[in-house]
Structures are given as structure tokens and as C-alpha cells.
Image (tube, rainbow, N blue to C red):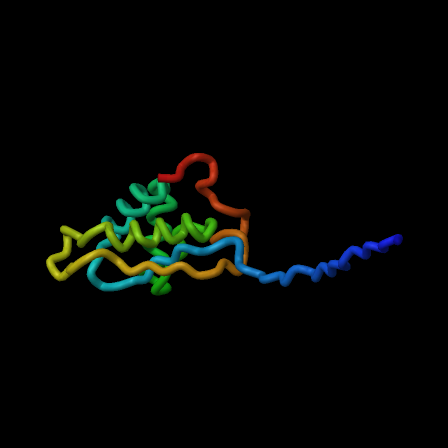
Length: 126
């Protein structure tokens, strides 16, 4: 007796593609409890920004209410947001009760100046 063996057919479905943002902005939110000096020092310590870049962030957050500090991948953005939130109060202002506020949001472009991805990718991560 000859038995015919049939293999079950398997169907492969195209994978569902979810589009998640690749790059995220770390956004510093303005308040009236922190000085330019505080913001500049924080940008230099947490993001390794030079004096000019740190001042630009301080000026932008003061004049526009928010400033992009860094554009990077999500996990790194979350770390940097948390570091800002943990930076502490501004010792130069008596009304300062704690650290500044920061959020992350999907980047609509590849960096603050539109000139590419993570500006600190060259080893300046802290």
C-alpha cells in the first residue's frame, strides 16, 4: 500500500510594519526659577555643549519657552531628560525649588539645526 504524504502548506503573512520615530528631541521647558548660568552649566555638564552652544540653548529657552538640547535615539533621550529633571535647584535663585522640566518628543527632522543626527554621537555621551 502506497501512502501519499502531503505536507501542510504554510502561509506567510507580510509583517505588520509599525512606524516609530527613530529620533527624539530632548526639550528643555522654561520657567522663572533658573538663571542663564544654571542652564549653561547644566548643558555643559550633561550634554558636553561648549559655552557658545550652551548659551544658545539658554537664550532659546528664555525667549521661546522651550529649547531642543539634543536629538538622539529614544533610550538616550529618556536618560538625558531624567538627568535634567535630577539636576537640582538653582543655588543662585532663592525661589528655585528644584530642577527644570524637560520632555522628549519625536523629532520632525534630524536635529535642532537640521544638519544631521545626534550631534554628540562622536563620543561626547555622558
